[in-house]
Amino acid sequence: MIRLEDLTKIFRTPNGDVVAADRVNMEVPEGEICILLGPSGCGKTTALKMINRLIPPTSGKIYLDGKDTSGLDDIELRRNIGYVIQQIGLFPNMTIEENICVVPRLLNWDAKRAANRAAELLDLVGLDARQYLKRFPKELSGGQQQRVGVIRALAADPPVMLMDEPFGAIDPINREIIQDEFLKMQSEMKKTIMFVSHDIDEAVKMGDKVAIFRAGKIEQYASPDRILAHPSNEFVADFVGADRTLKRLRLLTAEQVARSDAPITSRSTKIDDARQALSGAKARIAVVIDSDHRPVGFVTAEEMTGASGTVRDLAHPLPATVPIRADLRAVVSEMFAQDTMWLACTDDQGRFAGVISQPDVTAALQATYARDRNTPEKLEAS
Amino acid sequence: MPATGIPPKSWRRHDAVAWPWPRATLFLVFALGIWVSASGLVDSIVTYREDIVYLTKQHLVLVVSSGTAAILVGLPVGIWLSRPSMERYAETVMQVFNIGTTIPTLAVVALSMTLLGIGFPPAFFGLFVASLLPIVRNTYAGLLTVPSHLKEAATGMGMTRRQILWRIELPNALYVIFSGIRTALAINVGTTPLAFLIGGGGLGELIFTGIDLMDTGMLLAGAIPTAALAVAVDFLMGQAQLHLIPKGVNPLR
Ligand SMILES: Nc1ncnc2c1ncn2[C@@H]1O[C@H](COP(=O)(O)OP(=O)(O)O)[C@@H](O)[C@H]1O
Ligand SMILES: [Mg+2]
Picture 1 (cartoon, each protein chain N blue to C red):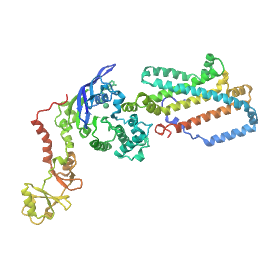
Picture 2 (cartoon, helix red, strand yellow; picture 1 turned 180 degrees about the vertical axis):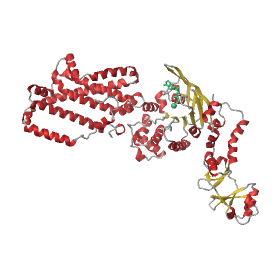
Picture 3 (spheres, each protein chain N blue to C red; picture 1 turned 90 degrees about the vertical axis):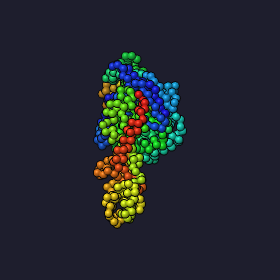
Picture 4 (spheres, chains in turn green, orange; picture 1 turned 45 degrees about the vertical axis):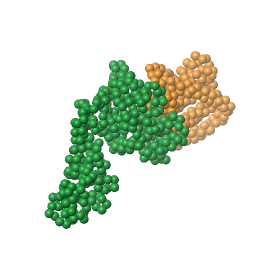
């Protein structure tokens, strides 16, 4: 857990004082990622660097795991906090292995244990240890260096990580990949992470909580969905963008919205039986599945009225299916692309997992607003 | 002489170990050999054999002692000037040093005679001063060019200042520092013959006396070992720079 209490930083410069952090109060619960988000120069980096004392605070307190850190020795404190910077900062004179082992060696791990840890971490990010341990940073691609920068910070398994725009220097495609990898690692590591970003999409994707900064002050500190649904003021609304409702689509998956009890039928079912089943379920459409339970088409109640034979004769092919784990943005995008009001969802094995419709998506987005209308605004970090 | 900081690309390439014109050089040496032996110079050079051995030793003592002293003093001074606490004064000190570099080495040697009289001490001191400047300058500049984000990463990971200097700053500045040492030794070896002029001995004795007496054999007896020494030192330094500096920070590898 990280807790900041009235944390303030004033830089005294020849051109006057710069208040880079102004009584910042926030708490990052154990195992969560908190994104510090805001325009350039708003004090994100300053807030972050005060935690590992690369910048000494002017006033205020920092608690890690409930303990006031001001009594701790700088060196001691830093060795127990993972630190990742945008420039990556791998040491060119050291091999990848030596880079990863820096903190373990500072903590006097024996060489063997540190080496094993380095190999284990490389494997974790999909880099072949045998191939990469003895290489130098300049012999790696940008994305590979970025991964090593992250695992180097994880080497001694610190409970707290500070990351300053850690994926800022990579191209957008690789950034998405590394973000996904990192989230996957985090779901097992459960580190408490303070993460600086200036990219709202990254914040929405990576953050359990997002703190929006302006001129050294926190404007809003809440979950990504809450910030997108209820920006606390004009500045936040502007910063998150006019398409904030669309951005919320990324926060929900099809699984949370799809109807898994949607009617199904098979190609060999008699039309009469299929129609009765549909009217019993008060539905207009049934998804046709094959013997492996995979969705292969659909039939409508209207077309079946007065018809005879089996479902096979009236079935239409499905325009597309979406994975049940896809986020709503992908789902809606597919709906627009196919010009359809609904889509069948599939699980990892390609089996039918439910039906998702445009009204369901709208209702899901509305649910937050409705829920919040009934509960009074909770006091959020000032 | 290369400027401070990271040497320009072309210069680095020139550092390459391969002799640039192997065939042309071989041919020249061969032609020189024919001319020397035809003119009976070999015989006359050989008559100075004992002098050559004695003076070469003297010469080497000067080179090695003044060069080593310059390294031992230059590195710490360069490191010290690059520390953040020296930031305010370092540039001024470097300005003074840079002006020092523009003084011809002959003048440096002459000045050290006025200070220390004649013999080994002024010769040693003059050579030491002439070699000191490039070492200090490159050490200082090399350390300053280590990117600040590397130092920040190291600090953030919990290294002490001393650890950052030894494990991050010096290794990453090593190539530039080494270039400074190489330049210093080239200056040193090239200046050492002048030591004779202030009574410091060395192979300059044969060269300058040879010139005075118009004795080509004597002159060559001093000049050839001096030239060979310069080539050998530069070659060794080139090899050392190639092999001793770790791969990750060595532009030659
Ligand atoms: N060492 C410093 N001295 C003076 N002002 C600084 C210093 N570091 C940062 N600042 C100022 O503090 C403010 C916040 O900077 P920073 O935390 O780096 O912003 P961000 O990371 O959000 O872009 C900026 O106005 C910046 O100019
Ligand atoms: Mg920043």
